Amino acid sequence: MKQPAIFLDRDGVIIENCSNYVRSWADVELFPQALAALAAVHDSPYRIILVTNQSAVGRGLISYETAAAINERLLGVIRAAGGRVDAVYMCPHGPDDHCDCRKPLPGLLLRAAAELDIDLPRSVMIGDALSDVQAGQAAGVSQSILLRTGRGAAQEQLPAASDLPAFPVYDTLAGALSALIPTPP
Image (cartoon, rainbow, N blue to C red; front, side, top):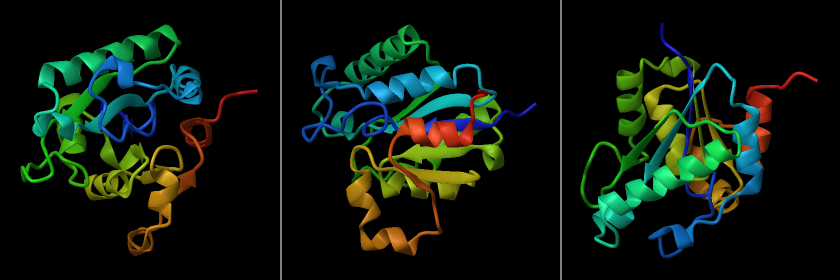
């Protein structure tokens, strides 16, 4: 039976964006509210899936193995805080590589849906960039949500934001997840 998923961008949603790219664990600065939010939805019926563009690999700034190791270490921190992430899908390509997995294209979400039996129309995409919103909309998820964390507040003000089909905006991952999955009192 197909399950719905919450697709999450990594940088700007769970960790701070880094202007020079996240090249090592030393560059990782976690959003404490994101860790708490992931812990709060640990038992939800949604699959939790990270979908992240990591063009530092395609640009030759870090190896694929380094990027994967950063993701694995992040998963360990999330688990230690009581959260859950079921899978990570990473686009290692640069913007000029013309792949089908770099957001705003929906390739990461479509691959996850095929491999993990995800029900896309019942799923949600959450990110801090219009490219995240576009990827979710292109994949056919029920909602693509923009967070104001990371680059989101600036992205929300771009003229291109008003050209997209309407999408909800939340201040934090905690706010978005609590609206999606209300916790009992």
